Each structure stands twice: as C-alpha cells, then as structure tokens.
Length: 218
Length: 218
Image 1 (cartoon, rainbow over the protein chains, first blue to last red):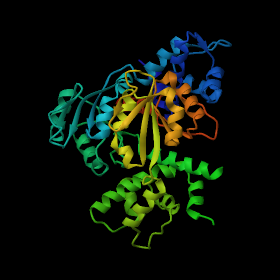
Image 2 (tube, helix red, strand yellow):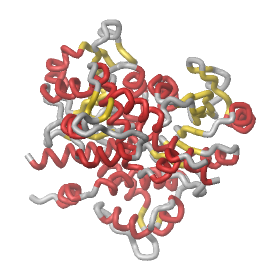
Image 3 (cartoon, each protein chain N blue to C red):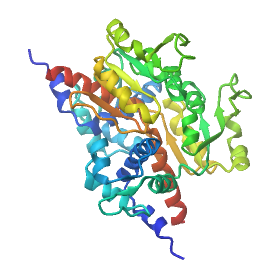
Image 4 (cartoon, each protein chain N blue to C red):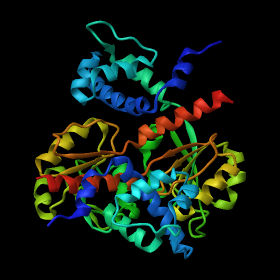
C-alpha cells in the first residue's frame, strides 16, 4: 500500500518543515479566538511570510483550502501536529547534564512537542545516581545497557565542546540514530545518522553582529 | 578613521558568522592539545567543512595564515573571540520566566559567550519579586523603568507562543533593540529591530522528519 502522506513527507524541503511550526503557533492563537477559517493571505499578512509560500508549504499536507474561505483552522491544526510528529512520543537521552543539559531536561516545552527525555548521562560522579525531576542520571559507561532498556533513538548532546565528538561516537556505537547537537562543536558521523545542530551560541554571534552593524548604520 | 575590521564585519554573510563558532570550538580543542599551527586543510578534514570555504570564512578576519604552516592557533582564537563579540558583555532581559526562560537563565554557558541576563520579567504574581540565582524577576509592567536603569539592548523572548507578539511590541516600545525569539511564533517588528529566531521546536520537527525518512529508506 502506498501512503501518500509519507511520500510527501520524504520530499518535504527542510525550510518548509521549519516554517510549519510558525503556522501551527499562529493557528493555535486563532483557534483560541474562535476563528474557524483562515486564508493563506490572512496568515501571510499576520505573520509576514509570503502568501504563495504559505500556500505552497501547506500543499504538502493532506488538506485543501476552500476558495474564498480558506483553511478550516481545527483541521489544519490537527494535520500540522500530526505531520510535525509533535503528538508522538520520542524517547531521548540527554548526554551531558551540566548547565544546559539540566536546563533542557527542565524545559517542559520539549515534552509538549513530543520529546520525552527518559534519562541523562554524565561523567561527573556527583551527578550519577541523582535525578532531575523524574529523569534519572546515569554514568556514561551505562549508555549501552540503558539504550537496550529504553530503545532510545535520539541523543541530545550537551557536553563540553571538547568532548562533543567522543560523546557522539559513543552514542552511535550504542545504536543512537539521531543526534541533537547543542554544543558549539561541529560533529562528524556517517551519513545514516541524523544530525540536527542547534547552535544557540552561533545565533548569539549573529545577533551581536547585526546589533553592531545596526549601530554603525545610524 | 576607517576601521577595516568593522567594515569587514558589515559585509560578513550570516552563514559565515554561523560557522565561525565551529572553528573556535575546534581551535580551543587544538590549543588544549598544545597544537601551535593549523591549516585550513587540517580544519577541513577534522570538522568536515570544505577547506576553501574555511579559508574564505577566515579571510574576513584580521589574520593571515602562513604558507605551508597555516594559522597560529592562539592568534586565531583571539581574533575569533573578539570578532564574535563573545568577550564583550551584552546585557539582556529574559521576557517570560516559565520553563524555558528559567532554564536559559540557569545556563551559565550563555554568560561565557557574552550574554549577561540582568533581569527576568513575567506576568505570574508567584514569580514576581523572586529571583533565579542572582537574576531578579520583575513584573512585565516594570519593563520600561528597568530598561532605563539597565540600558538593556537585548530581549530574550520565552513567553507562551500566543503572547509572543504582544511581548515583542512591549519590548520595542521600551527601547529594546534586538530580540532573541525562542518561541515557536513568528514575530513582526520594523526593519530596524534585530530579530534572531532560535526555533528549537522547529529543529525538533526537522529531526523527527529526517528520522522517519531514514526508517523508510532502510
């Protein structure tokens, strides 16, 4: 059986996927105001993205807008949530439970978006055996057996930059399939491993730079 | 007097700025191993970025590599840190001290990269008047007077998605110049305001999507 939705998902460009949460967030807001239908033109106006881009992005979903009425808000929200995978639970390990790792474990927002951090790992003896909320912290040496126990596919990398590659190699050796890299390091892995970089410090650098540029323009 | 470095900074493309922290992280690692010189070819090999791209990125900096020897690690680290603005202190307000806002305040990594969160703001009476570490939490109503007191240019947005635009408007009215948006909402502002989006939930969606795609390919 051919699943059209899955095929569409394969060819979905990454910039489109990145924009979908904007639409979802916007639609949730409209829904809270009891708005029943929105057009791509209206979304475009409100969130400042080109209307044809929005229509194109939404065309990947299993939903059609009605002429002159637009998209049904409830249905579109449901489609987006389903499409983005936010309603499915994805088990994840937190690798490195320092300042950022601890902070991410404590961010309940991640859970709302389907990320279920089941355990943390660290090399610091003071942390091993403790827990953060409901999340137990184990030694990095236990990664292999815990991976078998939890069947976790996602590893969130929040170790010090200089250990990023070592930790990556360890995770991959244990069968982790996707790595969400929060370190400022570039990590290497074979092509079959999914790597998602979230370089918050790089974003800081870009922001500083644009702020200084702006000052010079005045 | 013309400051060449500043001019270079103006024309620096954003993808280049985003890659510079990778190089910095790599160089710090080399330095900790007492490596004195590295070539762009060596960096390329180790972090999997094209060597000509690296040479081009580094050409924006006030540094020249030596033929057959490469770049002096210490000097390059110093230039990168200076260029990226990580050694200067940038005051920032945390707008929204829920789960994520609190987590970001507690991430000491941000301070290492020059971000100095001086105060948090929230509408929750239970939070107002408390503090997280050394960071006092005020009412959103106090934003204006606190902004005058601290002279803060950066606002970090971590409110619930449906309040993102309102909080943005409030910040701009108080003279905030740059907004680091952690909400999944798209926010609108005039062109003279710097907006940096760090859509961690969008990154999650991209990661889920690629993980599913990968499973279908097997």
